[in-house]
Image 1 (tube, rainbow, N blue to C red):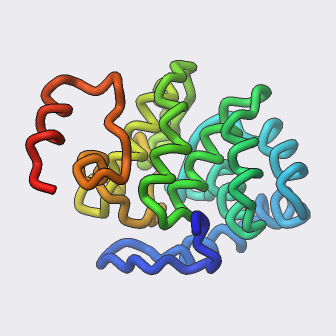
Image 2 (image 1 turned 45 degrees about the vertical axis):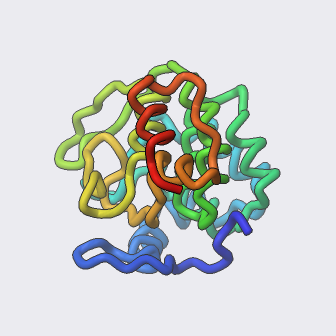
Length: 205
């Protein structure tokens, strides 16, 4: 099963807020109540996201960014994999695609499928704006760079509070790509560096 059906993650890390805590904070914000709460299906959600989201932002600084508010709402809608795939391929807004990628990463519990769904975005080089966690400053990142960081997050000891990812968001554990490749659960990327391919082929199975 791709999507975790509940609102609370199974992963609990010391010092990292649970999804329940993040959702509770977001749902108290006037923006969420005014813009996000009325959205009752993925089509309405995508239409709103195309208009409302102009940068990637998390829980800090206050208030929660529209990006995070709409991510919380998408989780609440419990979209099907087919609906998420449509959002990942949305041709009207890069932020709808990035939001859908964050939702897949936040909700999925089947590691290989996460990579399979998000890998196509590693070939997208459009620039996006990302809000700094400690100020209102904006950074510019290409989609492939942001997605690469999203996939490289394996727990809070790595980049849970990376200013260029989504600060304060408790993404669940994701097995490293090389580990899944080693055990034959994921195909080696054809564009991987030669040393990565060699490491995978030399790992014991």
